Structures are given as C-alpha cells and as structure tokens.
Figure 1 (cartoon, rainbow, N blue to C red):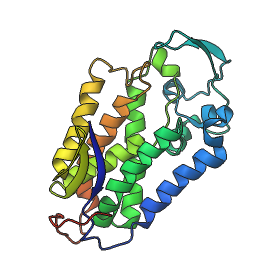
Figure 2 (tube, helix red, strand yellow):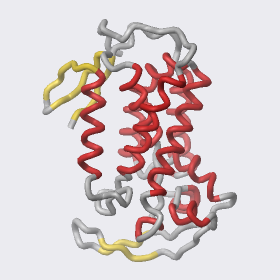
Figure 3 (cartoon, rainbow, N blue to C red):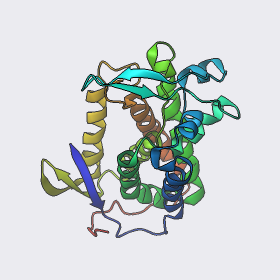
Length: 255
C-alpha cells in the first residue's frame, strides 16, 4: 500500500482557499452534527441509501441486531432515520459526513495532499464545482451498483468519492509531480502517476468480486471510489480549459 506524505508545491500560484474550506466543513460536520460519530440519528438521516435514491421515497427502519463477521459478536445497529427533505439531497450531504475519526483523518489527509494542486490548476470556483460534481458521480456509481439486494439498504457516507475525483484530476493534470510516499515501510519519492496509479490499482483489486459497490465485511464503497476517480480523469481537462499552464512540479519542496 502506498501512503502519501507530501508533494511538490514549489510552483503554487494561489492559496487553496476552497480546499481549506472543504476540509474545515468536513471536520465541523463530524464534530458538531455527528457528535464525533455518536449521533446516529443525524448520520442515518443524511447518508445516501441506494433504495431511497432508486425509488425517491424515504425509508425508515427499526434498530436491528447484526453479527460482526470477524468476531461473531452480536451488535445493535441503528435503523434508518427520517430524512427531513428530498432524499436526493443526501447525495450531497453524505459527502460531508464520516463513519469515524480514522475515516475522517484519512480522507482529509489525502485531500490536503492532492487537492491544493488541482485547485491551483482549476482556480477556486471551478475546483469547487469539480469537487461537488465528481462527488455526486461517485455517489451515483455506488447507488447504481446497489440498486437491489442487501446493499440497497446500507447507508453510504464519506468524502472519499469526491477525493477520488480529485486524485483522478491529479493524475490527468500533474502526472510527473513529485510525491513523497511511504512504500513498503520505506520513504521514497515517486512521480504522481505512479503514486495515484498504485492507489487506483488497489481500489480495482479490492473491488474485484464486489460489484455490489462495496463489501459488507470491509464497509468500503469501492464502486464510489472507482466512479469518482474515472469522473475526475474525464472532467479534469475540461475544467482547466482557458486556464494558464503551469510547470509539472519537477522541483521538490515539501510542506
């Protein structure tokens, strides 16, 4: 597994204000509205439920017992909560919620590393539109792969779909930018196309046989990651049309 530590920012032209605001919103939603992961009522009201998106109807269910596949322990799982407005808006709200502290920190770290360079290429307004659009594409990818079956009633949340779109744009716009990574317990510097390419390869391998959009055992929506990434690659160049070119980051400066 490749874990990014930092990348070359020596040619940055703008302060990535939108990226900072997105990170702040994610953190504030988790702390203030999700109660650091303890407010199940809020979380289960505003997450994306594939069956709700397919039917356009809100689904409410009772708490129920589930069995942890790793330990065999029985746990009480919260039921789906009423959504106070159109269920389709959960495609947006779910992008700013997380399942736990580790989930939040991991996503925000990747956004911190890769988002500023993409915002620098696109500019502030375009980057915001791009982030939201690829996030929606990721959510819809997960929904399409979970239209029926048990997965259709499992809520999906997290910023990783939109961040996957950012990483797809990073691959398209900054393929040779130098990225410092932890690879096989060794810190090394590799081009962006290798760093991002290895991450995407891991998503594909992990998603093989899980074309229901995610594994109930892992709790990871691989279809959302893949869908967001592909959308990011395809939309990156249109979103920088008319913007001035920049160097591809061959100098090296770590933040």
